[in-house]
Length: 315
Image (cartoon, rainbow, N blue to C red):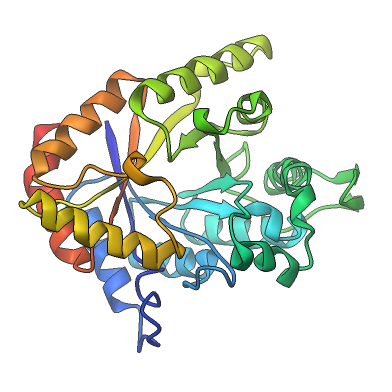
């Protein structure tokens, strides 16, 4: 099991304050690296859930760390033009010497703020799935150094290339978000076709196991080596010892984060660290090999220390 930590780029802005700097973000990343964990991650939103811009932060993290992978969990790829996204991602990948991982998802339009976010970027949210697929395909091809001609529903590109390109021969690494609860078969095929791996956020362990089987089936159908694909789960925890207090803080945190608590008990666990250990073991049995952990807490540094002291040693 490899562990990654989601850095609180949303938390800095969540209560309406303007931060003076991002020292706490950089410090947490350095702590994660010093502890020997695998990766650090940042989320994405433009206007619906204000936070630091993800690729800019990845560039700062690349300059402050040497070993940890740096990634997005998850980036709304369809909000961006693929040529601009490819250029930025390849540049950060060069700065980090090949450590970038783009976790990419279609993104939601669950409320007015999220729907307006797409329009603010000049994108019709009703076409975001097909736009997403075109975007990921173009980004992969450009970042591995191809000359791209693409005529699709959303983009018309003729003999486009970028420089720099990714230090990795296959281009910037991508993980595609897919969820059993979404109930759409297309997402599993999409992950098998476009991703170097896949990521789930909202599934119970038994559902994640089914995601794994569906992506594996499509990967094998296409002649891909499924064992080479990264299998990732993104979980949200609060490790205060008192379960009731942990639940109350997590609920407040998530409601501020999203404007609502959108997935109920699909988040968690809330309570003593052994609950987190047990849940991670369940996802490991279901096929996960990388666990990205977000703390639903207003004391991120303390939660990270507890995770390093009480959870990581169990693995």
